[in-house]
Length: 306
Image (cartoon, rainbow, N blue to C red; front, side):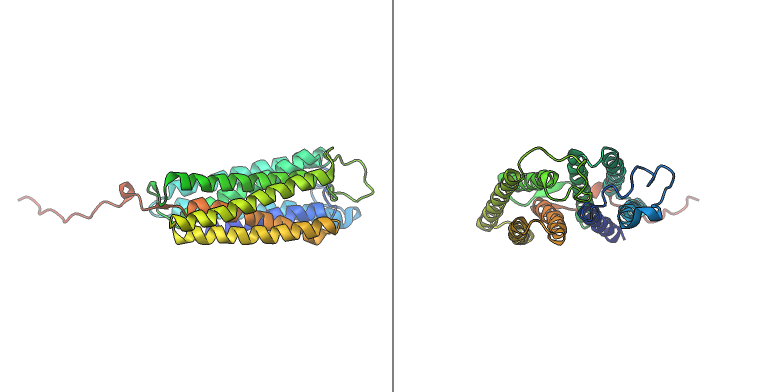
């Protein structure tokens, strides 16, 4: 039950990344003109707001679906016997990330889609993906202390790889902030953009992608050399495959003037790349059941004294 609930929360955390991107790509970022209401007088979009209002409001409503999935994960962890205290904390961490990101989304609307708040909105969504993934992976393990399955420098290498992938995602948000899709119709000139040349930011992003590919290849060879656990080696190969696919998509996207469908797929793959990277260090350690939490043995009843 806990594993299914944690997986549902993880899936919804990825869905909210994609639907948030759809809001921007359909130029519906200001479909609802204010927050937390859709207009100053209405909680829901009015007919005059048309398609853009429906898209923005639908994304807001999906936050409740996400919250329900997170709530299920919290209850499942809390009701598990024995109580999974660590998983419950991860569930609550997801809840507060959802709430804070909802507020950040409101700030994004109230500031007229400021590109820096849009970037923070995306990074906060990726933080939610991180915690949701951690809860799902931990739900398949015990609650005992973790033990490294490789030498510590190898484990640290995996964290360097995660850091590089995180910087790659952050660089992508900067490209978005200076790119072709500000989140409103193209004739709307009031939405601010990051005042850095788009081509330079795109090249900076591509450079990070090259470094990421190189790090993934290095991890594959290092894991093979030290005979790392098979799951870790498989996950490193998965990360490389997603990075290569993402790189091809990124280049095609750049030279075709960033069509909306390709950008949306690029965002989905960004979330999957982040997940693939985060799963690698988790495969380089083991976590058994906590002996201190084991139930006490049942003692045979004592004979009553006469």
